[in-house]
Image 1 (tube, rainbow, N blue to C red):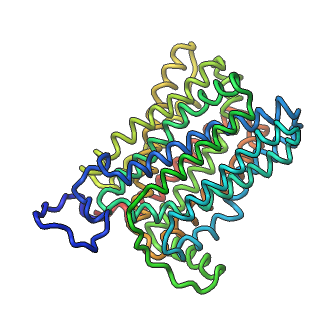
Image 2: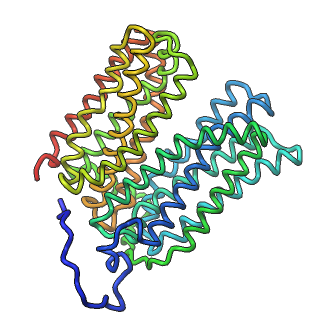
Image 3: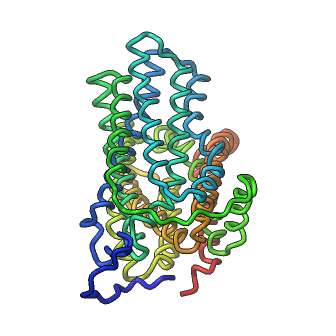
Length: 428
């Protein structure tokens, strides 16, 4: 684990060939221009994506009378690119000397795809097939963007500040999860759903302009390629053979598998078993985002005191908490709502703490030339298993009932503790 202590300041002027992250070792992130631009770009883009999660399905339902089968295809289209392109995009990212131009291009492609929805609607050519293609294009751009963005962070932020930077990004995810759906609802009601998708396109365009304004030079040394397939297999080998990376892969896959099984039955359980009013369910979901903001604030302080390893070891213990509470709850509405409020906020904070430290450990442990492939391997596994978890949760509920499934999910997520606590992360 790298040293968290700040090195003594020097009165000497930086060497003219010193890269910008090295010059900013002692400057707080909030005062670093390029980090602010990168954070604003991601926050803007993610908020726009949250708007589209509501606006595109509403366009299909309200304006195009989409069938259940068509809605299923539209939903799957958002996840499919991560499965088809995830591993290869990581291999390509490791080959690049500069990642920022690719990131800008991805945002511009996504913007054009989003802008096509209101244009096609105004011209009378919009269809469900059109929306599916748009979802595939935006999802593909997002997959390639994420693969390039992970190693790019190392160019903009010095090593000892990357955990804080990652916490800032996770805070933007939490902020978008709270503000995005509310903003989408207002836009759809005031401007119609296709015009709300136009706002998503604007967010991608603004993100591209912000990224274009970053000045930090990129000094990434491209990995020597032995062919795309061999590069992908090498990323898989590195991840599986490295004890710490293997533990992160196993824990992340286990969590997402059972978390998606839980999400698949969550709404039914809340309404039919716990009798929670629908309006309060939306509020409980938003509380998780607020907890995430608090978690981002606390994570940077905890890591400075204890380090990423200990924060990972501690946060993983709390992952089953919310699901155990949901499975065990009974009694009057005020009690159930209060308990869910507290555990939901705690879980939101814990998820951000765990995800932030996971990203920091990946940057620390993965070889520099293979960061893109290692990150994409873990993303591919953790994203791909979500589809399996969702189907398994629904089918299992049919067989054994809703509450037993919740208990199974709690026990399953608890297995992730073994991955982390049996790994080298326990060693100082």
